[in-house]
Length: 71
Image (cartoon, rainbow, N blue to C red; front, side, top):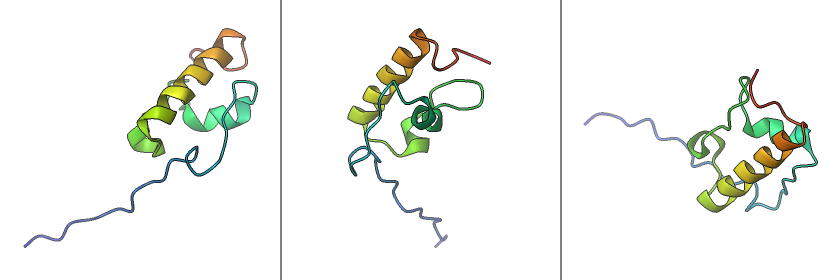
C-alpha cells in the first residue's frame, strides 16, 4: 500500500474566536493574496459560513479604499 501524506485539518480562525472587520485591513490582508484576490477556503482553512463573511468584509474594505481591487 502507498503511504498517504495526511495533513492536519486547518481550523477556522473565526470559529476559534478571532473576529474580522472591514475596518481592520491588516487582518484582512491575511485573506487576500499579493494580487488582491480573495484566498480560497481550502487554503485558509475557514469554514464555508465564515469564508462568506470574510469575502463580504474584503469587498466592503475595497469599496471604501482600505484594500486594493487589484495590483
